[in-house]
Length: 108
Image (cartoon, rainbow, N blue to C red; front, side, top):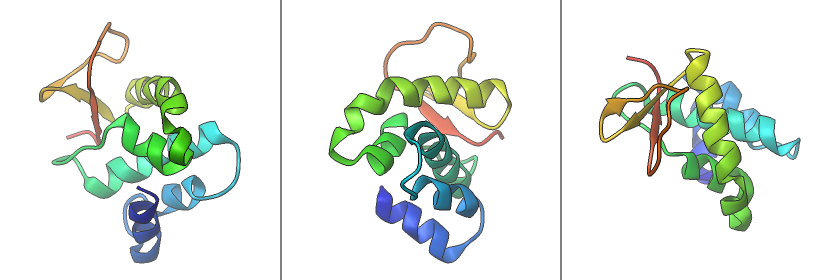
């Protein structure tokens, strides 16, 4: 996933600024938020990413420790209108109760 973020930076376009932040050595939570946005924006509204993609890009071997934060950040980003959270193709309420695998995409 770090390689994908590096390609996003190298090619510019949607998500490049966020990818740059995600690849820094700064605080984890802002980097994780930026990784989610970079991956979602780069992939566009007809594709998606999952929280674990961002966690892997930022956390490396310790990515599992970031999963709760990644899901919380996805909720925050959905509330602010930056992304949509989906499950099996259905858009979820960011304030709803959801379990299981989710996907994150830019709004359609």
